[in-house]
Image (cartoon, rainbow, N blue to C red; front, side, top):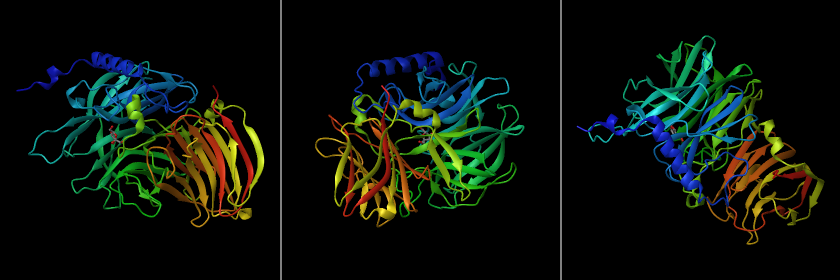
Length: 495
Ligand code: FRU
């Protein structure tokens, strides 16, 4: 019989092999669309943010990483750290498949600082089951690893087995609730319902099953990936990435969809929702977010700016996948979660150039900056004095006219991210309904992405953008009517 354990090399040598592979790929990387200020791997594939933590004075971001190619593959945990959430230092790969339980991948999970000051990582050990007599195609368990320095991890093995033999059982998120450690895990029930299971522990090592925290009321939702639960302003916010949800109006239009519900919860009871599902981001490219608490008590979230539904042109460049900016979350009285760029990232941009008020005539276009591939744009529309049917900004516009259009559509009262004229990548558009007499947009452009923050974080749209060579201009456009912009400024990304 095949002895799988004997075939698996030690963790250390697997990590070295993985880092060497990234070195080799990085040496021939094409950085045409490689981000200037978003997190990506040195080379290779990445997806979900994992293990967000503040440990020994540094922020740690881990991420799902395939170091042997630009497609998804056997998952490792890549790692990057920072002392200010804005400038990041590369760290060696933290976790690689090396034990029987994680032999086919160290899937998503989270980190906490234990009572002993060490950093504990909880992740899903994935094994493919090539056995035609079972219906599931993978066997997933929750594993742990521990680190003194936040960089080198010793594996502790399986801490939560798969009691029911579920096919999908993953993405442990751990936090401390008073004296108790809590872990939530996403799962697909035997009846194909998306659920979140709760486990509790007093020592982070032995865990007891404490029941189902939440089941999606939507019978189409078969699995809830990457669950996250936190307390904010007297309410609990439950986030997850839902598989199987059907599009409804402007919502849930992606392959899988990440969002949240607000409710009440106390230990020993299920979560009670007060709201319906609402997207955390309305763009084409956002999935699998995770949040953590900063030392000063803010809740900061990173997401993965993509999903599994399409290939990107960067795959030929030696890399694929990037994270969103860190987003600071706050909860409005009406249970809308506001997401704004973490304040720390303002140091990444030069002093802003102020335009002040700008008026556009019917069908007028106005070039604001001849070349702004990376930077931030702030503007406020005076909608009461605007007669245009659509008014917006052409971002990353190259000499052939290709661009990504971020606009306000008067007829639908939506902010849209319209990809129909973009050079490469996804077509179509995404939209989010807004209200009010003014509209504030803050737009971050990087070499391969655009993030649009609407009305101080009431909604965000994340998009990948792959402009061609040459200057990327920024152009205002007012379609079928006039536009009044009460305030406009922009700043380039610092060199
Ligand atoms: C979400 C996800 C997780 C899983 C990981 C595997 O994007 O599917 O559920 O742990 O990615 O890479």
